[in-house]
Length: 104
Image (cartoon, rainbow, N blue to C red; front, side, top):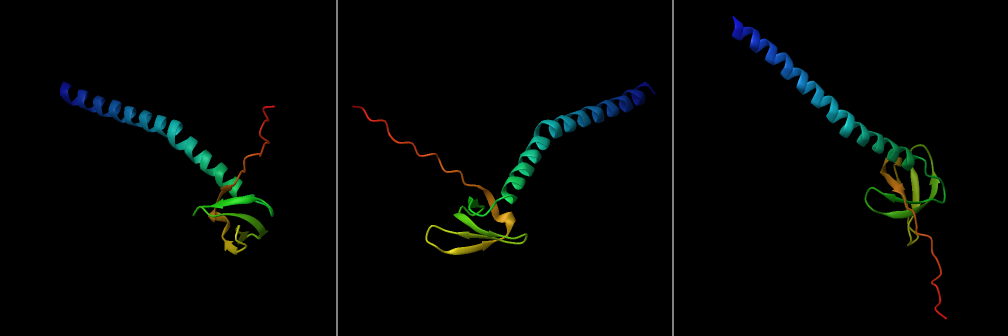
């Protein structure tokens, strides 16, 4: 009889430990990743005409038109390509060009 009580108490503490570990995993791993992904999707969906963007395939182009269902990009070669908005991975940020210092 004593062994049965110990077994049932062990099961409940084991379940409690599993629940705490799952909660910690969710709070410290899954939640931050989903927040970053949501922010990335939000940023990519808010592109405007004239922005340089990168698609999920790695293509870089300039947005020439945008509707709710499509984004049209112009590549460096002058080709116009149409994508769905979910295909835009990120805004492409070009480094600011600075003039080299002269050593006179």
